[in-house]
Image (cartoon, rainbow over all chains, first blue to last red; front, side, top):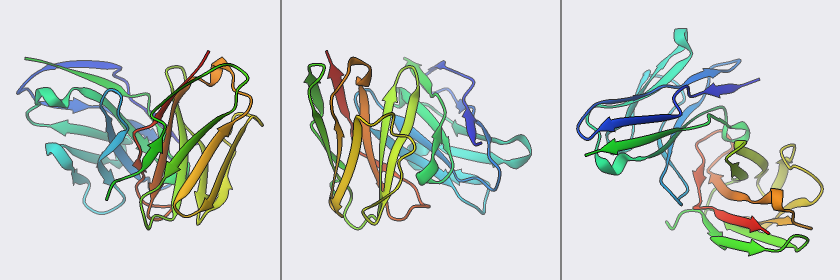
Length: 111
Length: 113
């Protein structure tokens, strides 16, 4: 069975600092991997996706993620966080028809 | 494109009443998904359609829940009768094909009192 673990429930960073959100997955084949962001009262917006090819994936809003098969990880990074990045971030694995989400990491940004 | 459109955005109803949530997917998308988000269980896939046909409804919690997709531009999720434990945010999502990324609507926050 596929699963996703986001070990950090809540992270606080200062504006301008770098960010890394962790995601570990379990999947029987080459996974499809996604990061979504959810602002309060809003839906989920796709930040980036990995299907195949280059393991470093660039997304919107300056985010990137690196697929590491050996570590079953797909961590999300941003070199300099902006206050508007405060939101909840979800990692997901699988096809959209069978998408498994992690429990989310809530990012707080201090000024 | 306007994205996935869900209505209503908020719904408050009394226990026992019928509730219907509506979704208009992105034009041209062949797959549609209904998710439920709660604090306890996170995001769960309830059902998905491909080319208007229900493919997998194994996530539908019980017979009180039903979903339809009468055409490519409209889907409904109905709960009858509703119960307080159905209170959640329900998301509709669509994708161009079943094996590509899903685009989510803004959700319907359902409160059953």
